Image 1 (tube, one colour):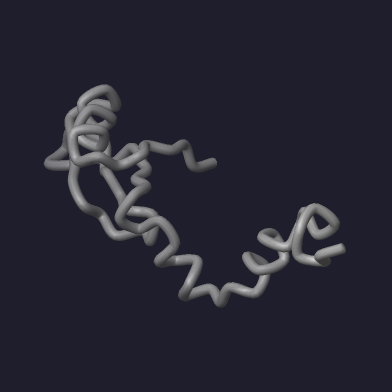
Image 2 (cartoon, helix red, strand yellow):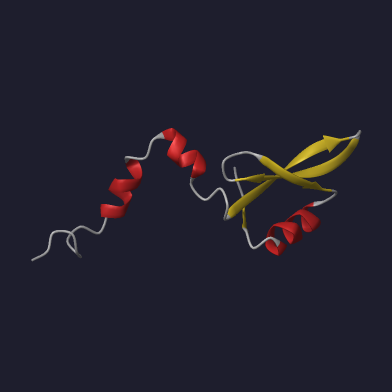
Length: 80
């Protein structure tokens, strides 16, 4: 029986545990974006960040930020 097949269902999880912090920072950077509230020019706004934390945009509210993420073919995610 192949040990890499069904008997090792957590092989992918084991591989992910071996990633260095820098690799995690780049993981999904071009496919995933998250939003967080900010104050811009004294007004509430929403910053858009790539998965590695780089701010890639801003919008006046959550719905417009989410629309911008989707328009750029990225996946919006919630970060707690």
